[in-house]
Image (cartoon, rainbow, N blue to C red; front, side):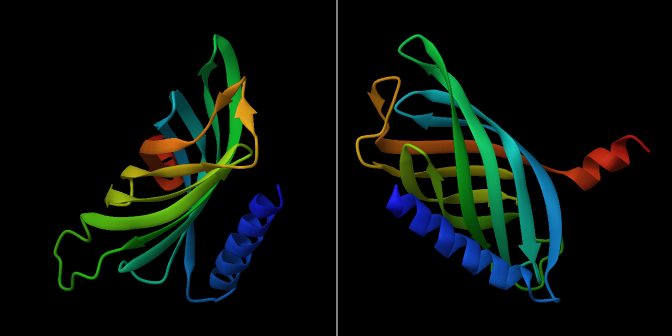
Length: 163
């Protein structure tokens, strides 16, 4: 449990120091997706996106993973931090893809991940989950291959749809 607290503290200090600078803008997003972590989970949550320019983007998110383990419905809270990188210059259609590096943590595991993101809205990532102590979800160990497919919808789009 101490490792999770340490990881959350490091990510919080890092992202709060970034957010404290006036040059960064922040955008809110709603997140829906699919995650495979020794079984299938649906994901619903939100993210904050911090950017100064389109080359490097920082994201901080919280969501709930929902699925069935050993025929019992389970919900796990998830925190995540991502850095999206694209150093193409003079691109006409903004940046179409980003390389993504990050980490996610639940009360059962911590998983570093890498992947790609289309327009910063559609993410495909993979990584490896390391369990926190003896934590199990309905008797099932949460370690091993971690695959995520996530759609990040900016709240500005939702607001503009209903104008």
